[in-house]
Amino acid sequence: MSLTFHTSINPKLKPPHIHLKKPPLKKLHSRFSITNSQKPECQFSPFLINQRCISQSVAAVVFGDASHQSRLYPLTKRRSEGAVPVAGNYRLIDAVISNCINSNITKVYALTQFNSTSLNSHLSRAYSGGLLANHEFLEVIAAYQSQEDANWFQGTADALRRCLWVLEQHPAVEYLVLPGYHLYKMDYQKLLDAHRDNKADVTVSVLDETRDYNTDFGSFNVGYGNRVIGFDKEPDLNPVISKFNNETFSGMGIYVINRHVMIKLLKECFPKANDLKNEVIPGAVSLGLKVHAYRFDGYWEDMRSIEAYYKANMESTMKINMKYNFHDRNFPLYTLPRHLPPSLVTDAVITDSTIGDGCILNKCSIRSSVIGPRTKVGDGAVIQDSVIMGSDIYQSVPEQSIGVGEGSFIKKAIIDKNVKIGKNVKIINRDNVVEGDNESEGYIIRSGIIVGLRGAVFPDETIL
Image 1 (cartoon, rainbow, N blue to C red):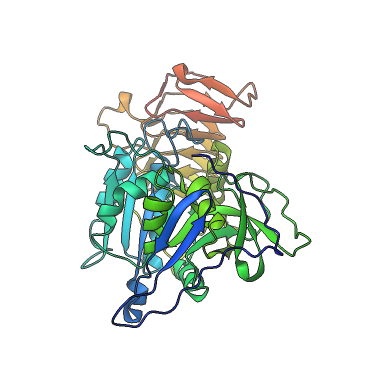
Image 2 (image 1 turned 90 degrees about the vertical axis):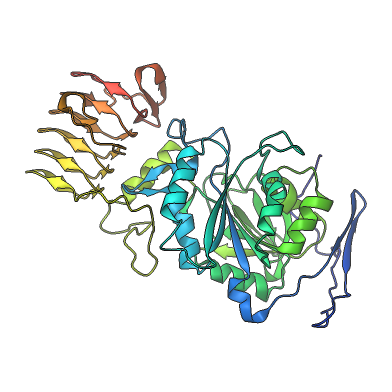
């Protein structure tokens, strides 16, 4: 299916309007239709909202990965984007799930596919109990093949369409669709309030600021009353006010979609569409549905590159101007409790750093770095401006231990889990390489940052 959308629409030409007469409480006879010369006729039935349960009327659908071609590779070589560790103890998806919990949205579906083993395990162990109870739940729906469809999920729209039978087991009035690999804090209730106040069919969250790069979620041309009147796959990096007083904003991949609207869009209007951001959402705009924009003016990082991931981790160690506050008591960040012992620090000098649980730090120096759980650092080792993800297990044989050996020096690097760094190793990008592929040797270089692959071994005296 080929779809063409434009960044703006002439306001002198009135778009097709949808007139919905409020139905009586007992019977619902009113129906409305949308007709497009290039699309089949789509009829939408209004779904009656119980005002007393309005705060519980929404279910969140979280996508744990972007695609198999992740820009965070090689951190995503054996895991999905949502499962990538961040700031020591957390995973990227924790930020989004915590947003849901802090926004009193506790009916959450997580749709996973690529390299999903680690993510599925984390979600099921972290959120299966304690935080969520009674009628509250987080349910993981892994990609599957069936007799009706032998393919895996072909995209976000295809995944939603094929999982509708699961979603409808717990009916909701609205679905909040969320990428699970972005770092930000948002009170989703404010987004939902704006959606309901506007009586919108679809609400898209957009960045209320200029971005100097493509967010990968297109740009929306927004007119009077925050009504979306156009879409472009390529965001305008320098949005300006047009002569019709319309503005352009970058999308975030966050959508609120009314239940009956989503079903009709996926099953009848665009039954072959695979992607929400490039097909279904722009299609809803072209059909004349009430698509509104919600402007978000907070910190948001989509981890679109190794450099962005590194920067977000470095910012987590700052005392001031911390972009994302991991220590916010009013909007806490939840994760899996690992029940590890406190970190053991012996004559170590640690400044402006984040230290995970269960670490063993001897006479070492750590500055402006993030140290993940179960990390062992030997005497005389120096770690600066780096991310050490730590280890999944403790090892009893010191000579074969995962961690940083005595006298080693690590600077401006990302070291994935379970890496063995021998004695007197220097990971410093000695030749100032900007981009390099050395996977066979256990590392690559992106934007001048050395990335040690998961489970790599760097023998004694190695210099990178």
